[in-house]
Image (tube, rainbow, N blue to C red; front, side):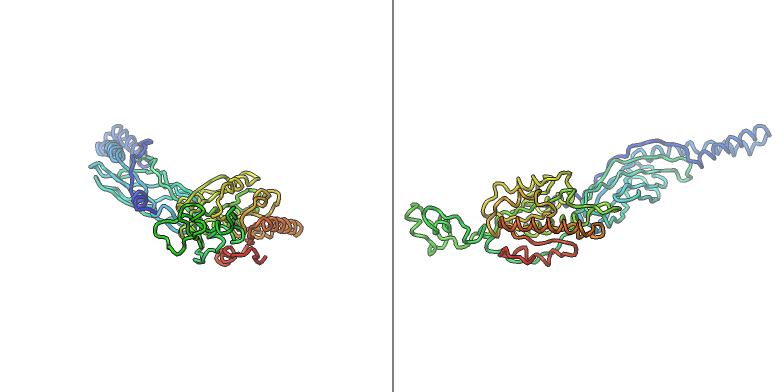
Length: 434
């Protein structure tokens, strides 16, 4: 996160409110009614004091009306959310800035703030004196993953006697991004197969023999003892042996987000299995990106984010189950990958036919791993024994077809902790325990 982005989020931008109306309150209408009665009774009965009281009651709302109209005319409201990006379930603070640029102060203010995930927040603020600013802060916590808007704000101003009220509404809003939870993964070394783009035996062999597969052109600073003279003589350029390729290659993280693959239990608003999958994608992509790999994240709905951790986490904050029954965006993302690329695919093993496009695409052994989910284990009470058995069979068929194509397969189910299976995901062998 850059300093510029932080300063931009913390800047308080105030905008003028959009005025609705200025009207008498119930107290103001009572004053008018009593004033008319008192004035009329004073005239009929010839009682001067009643007339004076009536005129006073009739006159009081007039300056109150002008005062409220003038004071609320320049009222400005701004929002700031700090931090503007949080993890699901964390707390953030919203600062509501009320600014009065006029010389005349306001009366009490009743604030109705539109906040995410619930009913509007209502509170009162005492009057703001002329040319002053007041900041009101309140917490927001327990938000689910997603992108939210704080505001707009409705303000009801009144005079000190409560005779006249003015309803105003500010169009200013602030954005809050709730990113998925991330697990801290152990900084394990990547397998040699990942650093080389495959196992040593799977390297392509050129016409000049196996030696050509592990040499490259000389670069300034290379150890002269590593010069490969046979290749140098053949090519005419200095060539050096490459004993180990740099591991800072590309990693592709795929997230299967088919709606029908993540059943939502009755009475629930979201799938626990889908949230687990999104959290796993966030943990893996951010962990590898922070370790120097060039990471590209592709969701089943076609969303793509690359390299920047915040961009990938923002994409996952917005990710929802895709209204499609295929995984074509994931299959397309596998096209054109180089041999130095590794793949993490978070898939649902409910339908071997749907995932056949991925399973049939050959990969270099050891360079691709699938975290194959069992969403039905997250809500077993809604699946009968026959349905569960059928899903388990489909999962096994899918896992076998992926393994045949060179993928390592690790199961993900209810109760699975990603940090616990992280060593299995990085195993150098495809023989992962089932």
